[in-house]
Image 1 (tube, helix red, strand yellow):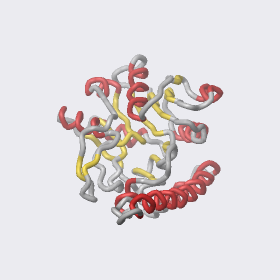
Image 2: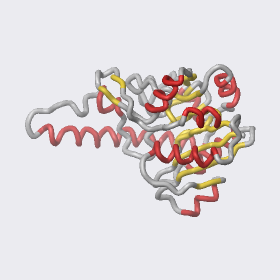
Image 3: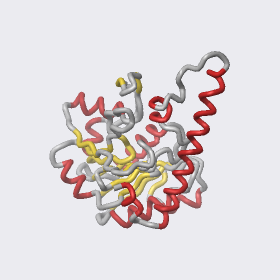
Amino acid sequence: MIHVLTVHHRSARWIDVQAGYLRRHLAVPYRTYASLEGIDERWHDRFDVVVPSAGRHAGKLNLLARVALDEADPDDLLMFLDGDAFPIADPVPTVEKALATTALVAVRRDENLGDPQPHPCFCVTTAGTWSGLGGDWSNGPSWTNREGRVVSDVGATMLWLLDRAGLTWTPLLRSNRRDLHPVLFGVYAGVVYHHGAGYRPMVTRVDVEARGIDRRWPGPLGRVVPPVLRAIQDRRNRRLSDEVFEHLARDPEFYRRFL
């Protein structure tokens, strides 16, 4: 049994899209658990279990895992899946191969200035492993990224827990050959798609740091230029996002444009 744990925040836009791709590509029995903060109750029947929750993304995922553990056998799989992510092929062979030798399999976003941690846009481990580790998606532990900045992000504590326990994990890396954006609209290991920034302003860390949006500007320009550049980048990325969303909503083979 696979227990699929997902978070949708203040928008139902991705609910039916994600559900359709799960039905298409998960041939094994699965059960869905969701956090739906700010989403009308009429969407609740799309999921097997809806867990009332508010707050930060990592805390919602941790709570969903606790609920699933009450029902899961130790060998059952927990599949963490961002609301704007879904399988584009059967992920089970990839997952089974990875978990035969490592404790966890997850997306690793090297393209996000060298992020080293497992990312919950797609991550699978057994219920027993998650419970034994005291799994936690919080940020906290930090690293120095490719721009020389000390940062942390969701999944940082998970990486620390794995390292502390002496356990290895299998990263799924971006397989795009064609990119509309260096971080958004990613296909990983040919089995999962992550749209990125589906529930927030569409300005990524790469946009901000690598493209110099927030660099220091002299005098009053420092208060004016960065917000303006962020707004411009958000509009650019959002136009791309809307075009890709329209494509993926009507064509299950949409991802081939990136490969």
